[in-house]
Length: 450
Image (cartoon, rainbow, N blue to C red; front, side, top):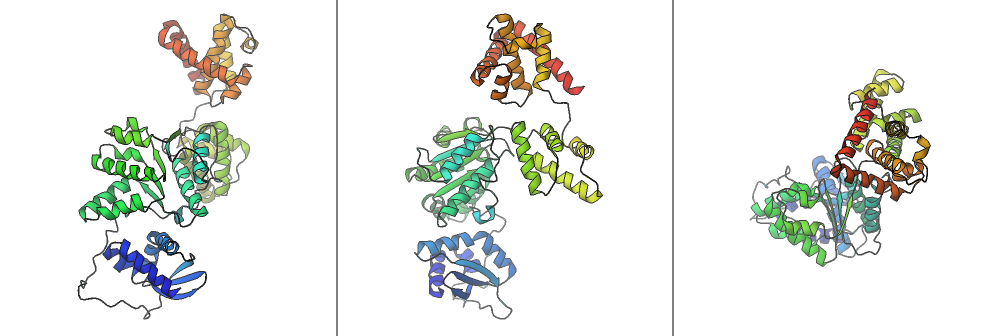
């Protein structure tokens, strides 16, 4: 194992910048070893932490490349007086140049991302397609797509899914070269490489030494022409080798300011999915799971109260749960609805939520029909149009699914979708219809404030 470690060090020396290897890898010594474990000595605690966070996955990859068994690697600080410093050669400077620690050095080690799994992701109608596509890619299922673009606003789970793909792939193949990097880090690293005449190493890392690329926040690339050009060449190289690529973005490439058409085309050449805001049912399941993680015992009424008020994103839910737990523990008070209302008042403007029953009463009152006629099979305009308006307003003001709305009017979910689209079209061309919908909508909004 000791000789194997020296072979690994030689491979690392040929790949890493000289000052990085000299400062971080060369001082590592083999303290102990057997068939399945290797203990490496580090000069100090900072060195141990830095190597663990930035080089451990690379070391394991090199063991895999030379065909040996990948050992369990432990890093220990060497006892005082036992640290052996390699002899300095004549051409080495007395003072080692420190690497730019504050500058991102590329892909982040996925060993720190173990919490992001598919099992911990709550699936609902808003994210089911993105979840299924991500999992199919992670499980190496055969399909025609080698790239996946996930579009979502911040806090809706696109990062969770991207990291879950990387973690799942590494669990199946620890030697896989998975690069996880944000577009900002990619840009900064490229700039550093250009300044230090290391662009060839940069290209090697992202083109030839990469099996899976997880590139986050591509909306950051707007206006960065040189980075866009380099990324385009990188994506071409990866696509030609049929490597897996996952992108995330807060907006479609076509809407990113100053995004080249060529790169936009590459980013959308594979599968494109969107993640929307979770509906009420999905929010309750997310809150229930998050509450368990925070060791909070919340009854169903409180979960429903939170789900009804916290509609923006998952981070907002996390913040509310942390505040509830902190206030309860610090003040030693019971978690009840009053405490939850106080927390919510600082996070959101609380209005009474509308139900499908509220909309039904308002629509029937305005069009002067009985509520039973919304469920009738009659196609007369006097009943059909109010039914369509009801479907449209339910989709606008509630979180109910198409199936739930359809059940209330005794129709299929496709009929509800068609009815809603029909009302939207009429509002654009018929001034009378537009005024009717505006009036009913205003009355409904007043209900939420009462």
